[in-house]
Length: 161
Image 1 (cartoon, one colour):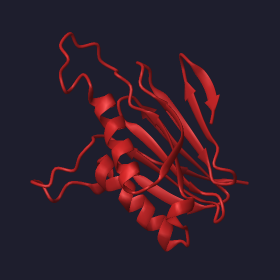
Image 2: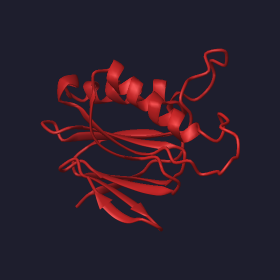
Image 3: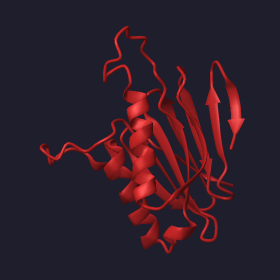
Image 4: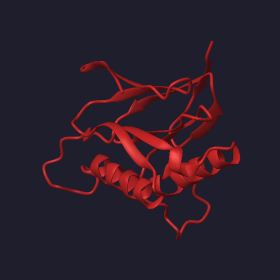
């Protein structure tokens, strides 16, 4: 039986198997699932924006791709995970608003996905699956028993990665 952990917007959780993480309402936000298959430890982060605003040092670390993901990796390593074994699956980063100009607000989903990919590359964590972009919302379920990510959408059905 899995423990169910709900990960809210701008939150991150790490746990051992058997755990099922879920995060709802991924629009332009990105859900990042990290997994060590040997330790059967996983983590799920729900980032809202790409980069931590260092001019505002009291901001929540888990809100931003470039600070949430390193914190998740650090927590997993404290639990005995080895960085070279950790893999990532990501979902979200949609363009939820149809804005005529190519503004930064309209492209926040793409910017979030780019920041997630850059941060994972800098940490040398390999992306093994992704369901990103387009224009629909997603809910992500992530299972630490085997690293399965299930992405559900009202309009696109269910996909298993």
